[in-house]
Amino acid sequence: MEVISYREPYESIKDLPVGIFVFEEDFGHLEYAGELAKVIEKILSVEDFKGKEDTIAKVPVLDGDKVRTFYVVGLGKKDKVSFDDYRRASAIFVKRLRKDKVPTAHLYAGENLDYKRSKAITEGLLLGNYSFDKYKTSKENSFRVDKVMLYGGDKEGIRVGTVFADAQTFARDLVNEPGNVINPITLAEIAQKLAQDYGLECKIYDEKQIQEMGMHALWSVGKGSSTPPRFIHLTYKPQGEPKDRIALVGKGLTFDSGGLNIKTGDYMRTMKMDKSGACAVLGIMKALAQLKPQIEVHGIIGAAENMPSGSAYRPDDIIKTMSGKTIEVDNTDAEGRITLADALHYASNLKPSYIIDMATLTGACIVALGEYTAGLFTNDDEFGNKLFEISKETGERLWKLPMDDKKLKEKIKKSDADIVNTGGRYGGAITAAMFLEEFVGEGIKWIHLDIAGPAYLKEEFGYYSKGATGFGVRTCLEYILSLDKGT
Ligand code: BES
Ligand code: MN
Ligand code: ZN
Image (cartoon, rainbow, N blue to C red):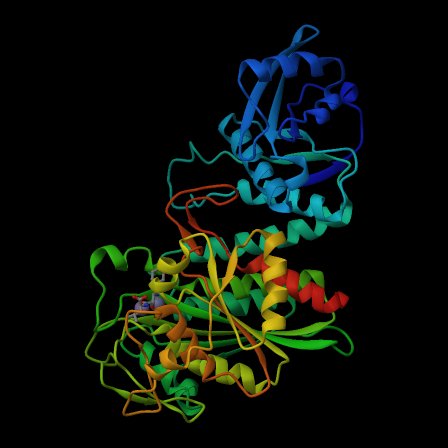
């Protein structure tokens, strides 16, 4: 879909349906419909439409001798309206256009749309136009909107919003691919292709090189699969001297069966999504190549498939990581943190100022925060707070969990090795984060996002379709842009 800015009065646009965003109990924007405003308002009151957030009303009215369709979408209370309200309203609008098989429409969301609102609307429109149906042989329900004309849309907001949404959609598409299509080898090939297409540096390490580098943690998790692990390192380098350097690390389990500690059927289902962190990193790298900030960014992925077999790693195994620290395996299903041990150490060796890792790490995080909020863990409160503030605008909900509980930390220290890979049932998301912290280099500001909940949804809502969400892409991108702007 294309979003195009225009500025013409309602009277001069022909035939096409018109979306109008209104506030709760303030339908001032209906003015755009000129003489028809009164009748629209009447119909809305019959329909009991109040302009509450996440509501939409379809209003066909007689305009001369033709029927003109208006879609009135609620933003909620004017004094409380957020960027995410615009984003969700836009998605709800597009989803309705798809249902009604409308390929082109106009949208009026206010007289003067600034950069941020135009960007949020563009993101919502594009994200709402998505569903994963490439494997459906019947295309009956795969109607997409081609074009939305946004009244007074800020061109830069539309441009950047399009890049953001495309990156998130790239991530969603990859996550939705099943394990028989994306495995560590094909994921590495996709990264390589991305690098070629967009002018990024790309280094792939195969299973031999992984072992030679001393990444026995990643190797151990991956060696039970007939598709061996891969280590992926993408780099975006700006022209000239970068202002700063950041590494993004993504958990890349292309499928997580649990390994020898095999999951039961219900829990194994959807575990193709265990590569969500990795796919978010790939989406971000793609966007950076288009946005070209003056920041050096490394995208790091340890790709593996966690499978049970005669060559699989076992409970009780003691593994030497690339950092030299040893890990005792309590449970082969706590595999993500083991792969991340090597990935975080490798990232630390690049001497970035910041590391953000994204991982579908623990079911415990979903129990703690629900499926719409990711856990935020950090060794630097200022950094954590910055990302948290950004997340309020991107709508990717984050909530901070504590890292300073010394008693809890003891649980992963009771081991024959330096550290053990589980800390018991209570505080499972926190002990997992504490485990990761052991592999972050001295002096590096680090954030871990446990995206196990919001990375993949059972039901559509707002601008998400069922399945992969691409969660984390926009928040990390916004952070990198803020580093570039120095804000
Ligand atoms: N990939 C899972 C975590 C997960 C669970 C992600 C549900 C998304 C939805 C992870 O590898 C895992 O299996 N974690 C275990 C850890 C436990 C064995 C300590 C868990 O959360 O049960
Ligand atoms: Mn697991
Ligand atoms: Zn996993």
